[in-house]
Image 1 (cartoon, rainbow, N blue to C red):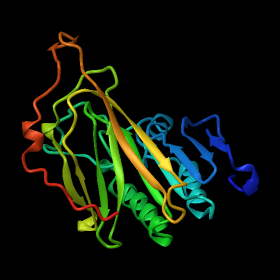
Image 2 (cartoon, rainbow, N blue to C red; image 1 turned 90 degrees about the vertical axis):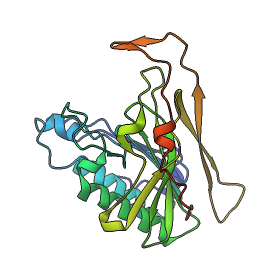
Image 3 (tube, rainbow, N blue to C red; image 1 turned 180 degrees about the vertical axis):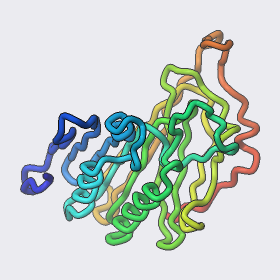
Image 4 (cartoon, one colour; image 1 turned 45 degrees about the vertical axis):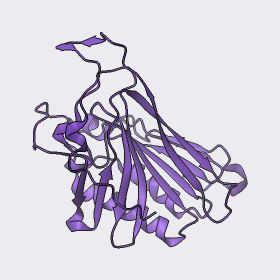
Length: 250
């Protein structure tokens, strides 16, 4: 449980599972009023033989609810091993049966976004949420917008750090979901190895946490090769075409 007295929450951690019959590798870390929640979307599939009806376990949902109900929480950083919002331009193009994003579980994704935006809206602008994830082979930053509440949440897809950089042309870098309530837009992907840094400043403005997500890039060495050929990046022309910058509602 997360009912630890407030004075003892400086470095509170919570993780794992209560059962030896399930696989759960998620964990939560609290640093004062900042919570970092690293989700496990594969544990349910492994525990139930690939026939899970939800991405997250009940314990993960319970932990998120407790974080959102805690009055001391001001900034929540949520990390996922697959993108929260990233739709394929051609459905089924992956062909390997693996989950590529939360979009395969629409109800769960909408539930997550609704909870996070309602939490932010309840004490706006003193609360912030950041969504981070690995991706299919390129890095980018963007925003998810809630057009009902008039707010947005920063989002980042990161990686690879040392792996193969992939062309983003088969992915939709902007789209709407939940009947138009939510939308997302990503900036031009980077054609380099990358990761991101999240800078959270609570001292600059006592009424609003300043949160900045910055991509860190490094060139793929010329001649770097993987199975199937040599790759030193990809052309960004396709990803630039038709991707407009959405006004940040944040």
